[in-house]
Image (cartoon, rainbow, N blue to C red):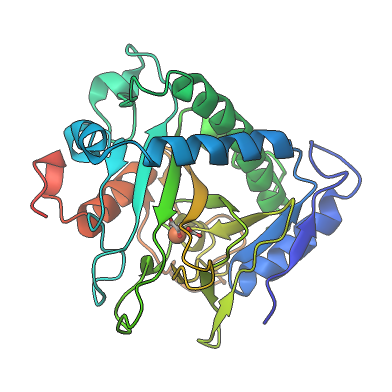
Length: 325
Ligand SMILES: O=C(O)CCC(=O)C(=O)O
Ligand SMILES: [Fe+2]
C-alpha cells in the first residue's frame, strides 16, 4: 500500500471545481489506512519553516525551564512534556520524545474556559521565547482553516452537504504540538519507540515533519510502511472520532515513530490535532449505518472521548487530578 497524495489545488474553498474529485480521493484513502498527504494546501512554506525553527528553540530550552512549565501543571494539558512522560503503546516502553503543547487563545470569559473543559485556555509560555504565543496562534489559525476545509471535503466524500460538519466547529478543541525525538538508541529492543503505536484520538491530524523520516503507518493488511517526508506536503491522518462519525466506514490506523534514519540527529515534527467542539455529539452520520443494523459505536461528545484518552496515555486520574506517572 502506498499513502496517496491528494492535490488540493482548486479545491481549497467551498464550491471550487476540483472538490468532488478530491472528495473521491479522500474517500478511498479514508477507507484504506486513513492516511494521505496533501499538496497545494495553501499554507506558506515559510510559515512551516519558521514553526520548525520555533520548535527547536522551545525544545532546546534548559530542562529546568521546561520543568517549570511542565504540562501536568496546566489544567488544560499545555506546556512541556518531558522525556518518558507519555506511553502511547501500553505494551511498549515510555515514548522517547519531548514536546511542547499549546492551544488556541480562547478568551478567559469563554464559557468552555469558565467551565474548565480540558484543552480550553491556559497556555504556558516560556518568557525566554517572547514571539512564541503570537507565532503559534498564527500557525494554529492556518491549520484550523485547513482542517475545517478538510472536514468539508470529508462531508462531500460521504455524500453529505459540504457544510455538514461546520456547526461542530464553533469552539473547536485544537492542539498544536512540537515534538523532538532523540536518535533511536543503538541496540534498543523491539519495545522501544519514539512514539509507540497508537491511533490519534481526534478528528483530523495535520503533520509537518522534518526531512529525516521515521513515521510508520500500519496498513489495513497489518504491515508497517514509512510515511516518507515529501517536500511541500503535510501528512494528514484521521483520528478515532472519524470511525465513530462514519460507523467504521473510514479508518484511523495505528502509526508509530522510530528516529532511525537521521544519522544521529534529533527529529522534529509538528502535529496539529483538530477536534470538534467539546460538546459536539459524535454519532454515525446519515448513510453510514446499513438498514436494519444498529450503529457500531455509542454516541458520545467529543470532549468525553478526548479526556478519557489523555487520562489513559498519561496515567492521569479522572477529573484532572494529579498525575501518577
Ligand atoms: O512525529 C510524528 O511523525 C507523529 C506524531 C504522532 O503520531 C502524534 O503525536 O500523535
Ligand atoms: Fe499520532
